[in-house]
Length: 35
Length: 517
Image 1: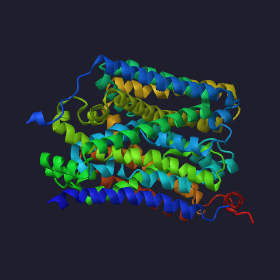
Image 2 (image 1 turned 60 degrees about the vertical axis):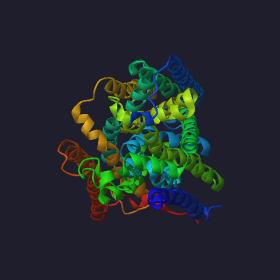
Image 3 (image 1 turned 30 degrees about the vertical axis):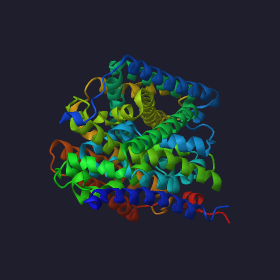
Image 4 (image 1 turned 30 degrees about the horizontal axis):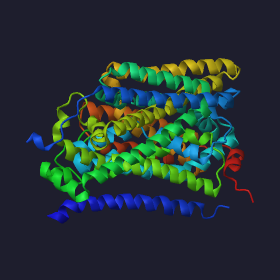
């Protein structure tokens, strides 16, 4: 029951961390070739 | 049963005076920055874009401020308070999926194209990119129409919260707010307005993050929140709520078609909003380091505060107050955010929150009004009557800015006409769907033609109007389904019509797309 209650928070953490990684990895790729 | 929830706080004199002083300070600093901008412009061109030398910190804060409205700062918490976890997707968990790619694909390109084409506004940029005065006129009329509808609802949250925490009628406070905005926009032009917006963006980012983090710390943690809201109503923990109607706006919480349309809406809105792209027109050319600073500032302001406002803040407000806020007419769930700040940080935090909400509201409205005024002066009058003098255009701008600031104030004070309310819901979606293609995609696709762009503008405008009627008045389809119809149609027309019609001249395309060396 406890696990069920926590399930939406796992999804929440995936969103928070995922969008953080998107921001960093995307910006790294875009600026990699810049002088 | 009621004893387990926090009582709804009564308005006290301290609370009212404190919020009044807070708003006065916020408006005072904004007007000061606007006055500093007064020395920065001499011609109408400089009034519209400054000297194109805005740095990454100012641009990042101002972009966040123009993008984040009172809704992101207040309405989002109310949605999650009302429906639980399933509301977080639409409330703003996806906000970064739009605004970060907006910097990636549109910041440097908007500046580069605007400099090459000598454009001071987004429609002017489009007119010259597609070599068509008719398209520039159509784009500015469509933009004016959508921004006007979208702007009318901008003051609602701030007015409601102001009344709820001070007991003073919102008319006077909102009038003061729009009057101050008029002064700093008229005095400061693009530069002064951008500086004021940057201050407002930085301020709301810090306050938003503080509120979200303090609320989370004081709530007792994730398991505690889950346990308490599960006890109230197990459906609040569901990530999708099939029990809610699948037609009308609740489709965003109730079905996968609705849920999956949300990241697309956020993606196209942030990239398509002209008041967002306007921040890049006056930006300097960014180095690698400056580009990183810009991205990180926008991530910090539209990431942390909005994600927390659109999830944990609403759930914690529900945990503390239970369903009691639904009984407070007419504000109901919109009081979740201001009452939460009072519960976790007393009057000081609530005052800072009200200031942050006004900062979010005024900056978004100012960004829109600046564009709307230039739609008339630069994009219609100068385009067809180039002999009109700068002085005349600047005076006309003063009047138009006052008019476009006054109308949202008037319709917050008096109920907006029913027809206007119906279209308001889809104005943001329509703006995003049209200008994502017509503007941002035209930076990358040489094959785009003015006919493809015109077809997209016409279809997107009509589809938004018909969609508003079908979603809100007739309630026959869901708002998420409408987004698929809107965006799908814009994509097919933009690409399809462009493929079979004449492109801009080779000289122009070589100039825009030729890489040196």
